[in-house]
Image 1: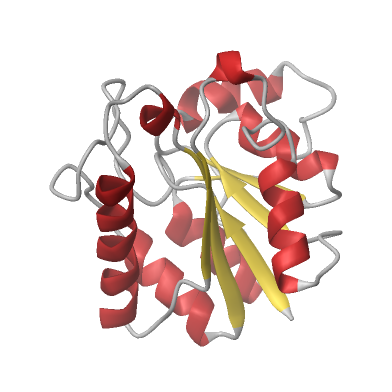
Image 2: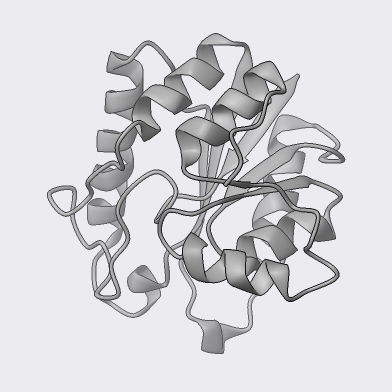
Length: 186
């Protein structure tokens, strides 16, 4: 099985310091839905792993979160692909849970659910916590410059641990790389 794990806010959809709280506020980044559909059509199992502390903070409820995820899945389906799983952490940072990235609990749940070893599985994110969670489980982290990615790219350049992580302009470019092996890195 070919598996790709994608962060949500800042990778697939616009991010907000005020949190994305409803399906109406959930707006895909240009090219992200089509990129997810291309991955799916190429035989990848496409899974989303996302921290959603707005749930734990009471900014939105489970119905709101499910409506956001249904909107995303429906858009990918309309583009000819599927989202095979959505894993989320509802906790706040103060909860010190195992599932909030950079902890690898969400990735562990994905590995268990799909009965797969995550070694080498691409994890696409826009923040250090996405990359750290992936590295903790032997994944292949890829950074996009959308969302928090510009700031994160500067942090990568200053860190020996993260220096070799490829950086892409957006999810579409990261997917191009996964499908062709040719980088449009930035």
